[in-house]
Image (cartoon, rainbow over all chains, first blue to last red; front, side):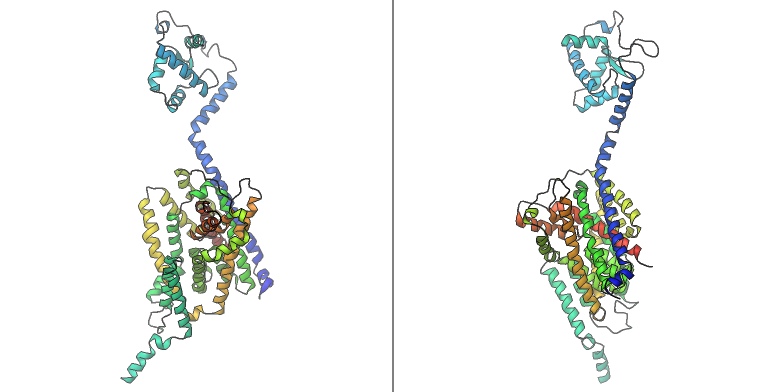
Amino acid sequence: MHGLEAIAFNKGWEIAFLGVLIVFSGLVFLSLAISQLYKLLDLWDKRMDVFYFIKDKIRSLEVKHPVSKDSFGRSVTKYQPPPGTVASRPVPPHVIENLKLYKMLSETISSVELFLLPRLLKVAKKRGLARPHSTINELIQERLLIPDGEGYFQWSYRALNHLTKLR
Amino acid sequence: MEDLLIQFIQNTGYYMADYRHCIMLVVGSVFIYLGIAKHYEPLLLVPIGFGILVGNVPVFEGLGLSIYEDNSVLHYLYFGVTAGIYPPLIFMGIGALTDFSTMLARPVLMLLGAAAQMGIFLTFLGALALGFDPKEAASIGIIGGADGPTAIFLTAKLAPHLIGPIAVAAYSYMALVPVIQPPIMKLMTTRKERLIRMEEPRVVSKREKIIFPIIALILCCYLAPAALPLLGMLFLGNLLKEAVVTERLAEAARRPIIDSVTILLGLTVGASTQADKFLTPQSVGIFILGAVSFCVATACGLIFAKFMNLFLRKKINPLLGAAGVSAVPDSARVVQMVGQKEDPSNFLLMHAMAPNVSGVIGSAIAAGVLWSFMPK
């Protein structure tokens, strides 16, 4: 048997068609997988940023305006330091400079007043700022950076006042 | 004493040889000449050429000397070919030698490797039309993949009596890539197309190179499980290379293992081409179909590249389509050479490696698919 008859008898057309289809499909799927691989790896590297971004978005939906009282009835945004404490002393100039810098950094990591301290630290390190741990510690000591009682931090009224004066 | 002398003379190769042995000795010598003097794939042609000389020394049957006699040394070494052991080991070495980063940087070029494998199936149809049975036709068609180990692997499974002519045809055409491909490339592309420059590929991270063989193994072998021996070893070799921590194993795969297996494969495949089995009308048909298969595969790759350019904003140089045949790295070098003849500052080699290495994967998948379609 020869010619087209032999091809048809041995199912040649079907084998050839399916064979080409399968080889093409295999390499197409592989190329699609490879083309997305580096994007998936990039997403994996940024997984914590994505997590915090989603968390911030959720919080921003809950917090439409600055909260005046927390769940225990404590004032969150209006903080008045008791007289004679650290907060009533003048703030050293280098701390005010750092305040300006870190306030700008906090605005890049959170669209609301509240933010996570580890994120602020991470961003400060990424930007190459010197001694971020001790700088943040100083800001806390000077009561410019205060906790909200639920794991987040925010800038105190004292800090905001200093920033307003600088403008 | 006279009787002893006559008996001795009658047992010599000079007495038992005929014109067919002389033809094969010339063929073997030509292979060795092409390998050593012309540097055409010397690592393949020299062992094969010498094997042809070894296999065409006439021997007395029953003394365990011929490669086809059960108790001969050559027969034991030939077992690695007939049992499909050598090709996967060679593929492991190829994986340990291959850098897939150009393919990972621009995955769309993989489709050129897929297109070139159409030559395999078109030749399969041609072989059926000429009267070969389906298993023989599949073994002949795989020559178009321009991949010696794959051709030997599939032929050993489907048509072991054709290993000699198919292996010799496959390796001959692989060695003649610089002669066969350029005319087809010039015929099927315009000067303007040959001058297209490719954009710089992105940098591929180490993690991508490590994850790729694992993903590729799962995707390809789940689709075509019959390709597992070849692709499994290919991706193992590549993982050993990219993992860095297994550099010793990768070094073993790409030097002593592949070199030893290449010697044994070449020698035994060459020795299997005994004159009475090789010089048949069937072998002539195989050689002709093999050449057609190779040319069609090259043409399919070129045509598909031009087809892709209809849809791509950033055009690719269609010469890369010719690199879709899996003669690594010769066809990529040919693309570079033809491209540089038009523009000496156009460097296409690394871009051509992408379809070249995807052609290796494609031809292995094609072999697996053909094997699974054949009646058992």
